[in-house]
Length: 491
Image (cartoon, rainbow, N blue to C red):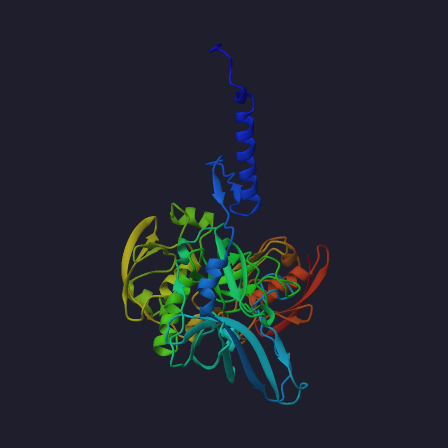
């Protein structure tokens, strides 16, 4: 008996076990049980993150609360009228309505204009959130649920400035509603799901990530969009953008597209911004915003250094309007607002949003930097009205190629410059020896046309300037005092 003789199985047992384990792991991977991608971030280059193998649970949980909205409007002898967002990107408008419009009779006769969109229930009573442009001026609104049932809907209230609307349907039964999420907590790169009716295809589910936050696209004074690459197309307007917990974190609203189809750049209104709007619409059908009574602009690094603002954040006051809340509280021109009720102010747009959300009549604390020192004021917020809207935000725009700075024609600028027109852009400053200077453009000139095309807004101006190539000459129609001038500027 030889006790030192090795067992026969020792030469094949371990390789056999290894092959079996590898086969099992490959089988699981190919079956889609999990999907692992490397997180190559500098902070943790060796970590891994799990990509969802399925979005079906989220889609199934939320879909019953998502509705298809169809509207009908009678056009009296009209032509074909299309709605577009204001265009900050160029001549062709990339912000499509997200729904197809079908026309019956030819123009110049009464006909029915039909449109499609999406929405979602916010409670069991039948209140539905959608976009204002989906239901604006509609004579009839139909809502279709996942189970195929249809209901007539009535407009409860709408807010054009944020493109949010609230409608309601009646039924003896309770409706399934959505869960609210926290859009502020969403991070760039997190997974999201969009549900809606692109091109009328009901309850279409697409997935992507949060591409960016805080996007300003020129659609209104309260732009603060979530950007996503989840596929969004015409008809998705008003539908929910959902996180992986099945909570609504946005309202799908706009896309960037030259063709009208999805190119991976969509925008949703953050639900945290929409909450207060929806609450007011439900309570009164209208939205009331707070008014501080100042014109403001962003801080440049040079201005921040000049005024002694260390972190470069805040909103610089251009003018304090006599008799309005800021004036009564002692706030002055050239003050830099850095805090509202203990919350930091990032820039002028952030300040506008914060003040707009303050209930009328409430006293708030505002901290400013004046001469390098911080001061605190108590301000009683008043109601913002349409005639004050144009005074709230100064948006100078630098046009480096032409060497001049232009600004929207607000009522205050018109009053100062004794301009009777209500539309156009005003030249604020002209750089010496620049193309604009050589063409005799002067500060205070009102630009009315470029190459015979009307210029009513900054978007019109930028769009037309973009059409002029380097070395080409553009014809400007300007008004100086009471006289019209035609000036040729070579880019």
